[in-house]
Image (tube, rainbow, N blue to C red):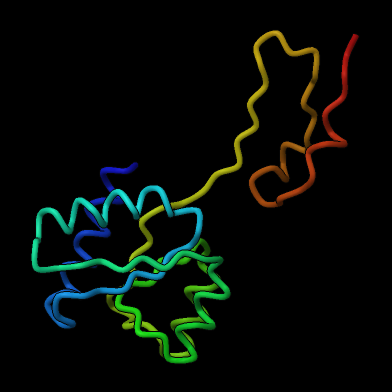
Length: 139
């Protein structure tokens, strides 16, 4: 996953670098901090004239910053809805938009767990819900 993310981010940064010079600002969701920090440093080492400035926060506040004029060359939202709002507001170049990651809910229990996970199988892929009431101790 990090390799794919690296390729996508480096392509976005490289494209923005050609347009904006040696300093680039990347505003990205907080959940991307580790990956984007590593990728930005690798990009800077491979492209010495360029400096990547990283700005991390929740996607909504990042969109607010951009809508108020924050100079951002790369925006990476944690969710499609925020990116859709950015596009509707004309804050991104639509043909540069790339979905580079996706999330999936995964529940992991130890193999010797005495808990049994029960969920409505037909709804599991369509709804997010609190799993705590669904986990019961079986003794």
